[in-house]
Length: 422
Image (cartoon, rainbow, N blue to C red; front, side, top):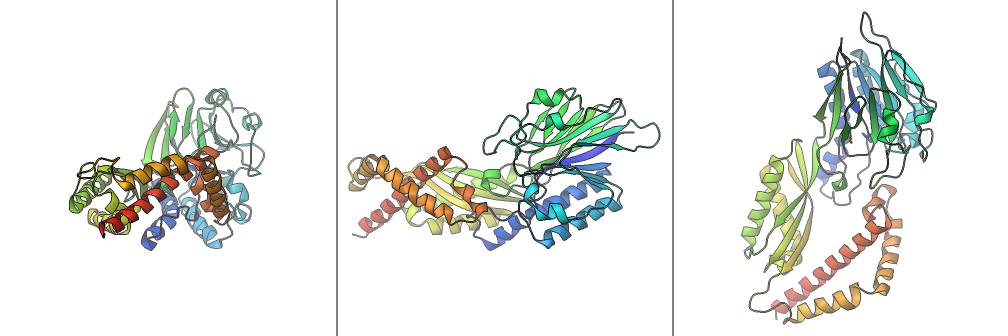
């Protein structure tokens, strides 16, 4: 008889809001509850598919959580699986190692939480079913700079061996190194399936050893854009492994580009925004689309768009409302002015723009001063929001350069408005 399980990771249950752009209270409420809805959907999938087990490959929690509301919610979901006779196998990741809930919550006997020493659980299957062995090892600290593979127990002879590991593999952008290892290292264990966690983007390697990083089931901000899912795994009577990606997230973040080149009427521009949102919404399977709009191109409306950015955002949100289950998380304006009756170099504002670009934005002194201001501001933010300044020095500098350019555009837009008023 087949052995079936759901493999999920990086739920980050009750993660605090990470984006400063979620100022709309209704949108903030949607995203704030999304990780709970993702866990509920995972449990529903387990029940609907009548699987044998749920494997959670780390970061079920999100750091130093103390809320017993989170604990009660998790206990209720685990109880649903327990009552259905579905086993749960959990390893702790780097975020779980910081959580008080990890240490305090007591699970029923159908739940195995692997400890800081590697263990192997043989699943008792009646009759002539092939044996299954689940291997796991949890992070005992929030850091694991060395590979953990050598600590795992050897494959159980004659069984289908399944390993659960929280790892950054050979490294991934935006992720610190955690329990690093290679695909070749994983294959060398002799396990048939590796259930991985930690990297928030899905990847699959199939063959004699199937290796799956399911990604996270629910994005929390625009940096976690794209479809989110878990993996349904079936090991057939012939021990062949079949995997299915199952969408879970209720809200999908996406960057939506709107080219307004040559558009010179406000109404026409808003129409272009609406059509772009309609296309993006049609391409998303999740119940909600959370869009970051970016308007680009050369248009005579560029100055007005920056001057009246609040009005533009309101009209974009209204169009999103007409599309349905669609939200505008943020609006970015990256448009160049297309002046009528004047070349770009003949207007005073364009000359001022050239001077700012050459003499101010490009100077080392300006960049140093801007960096000091940004570092001071970053230090005043809550820890969960500090990644908004970038995760490394290159990202930090690129962000400051972009904001400096956008600030210049805002000032010039207001000067343009004053010039028009005479």
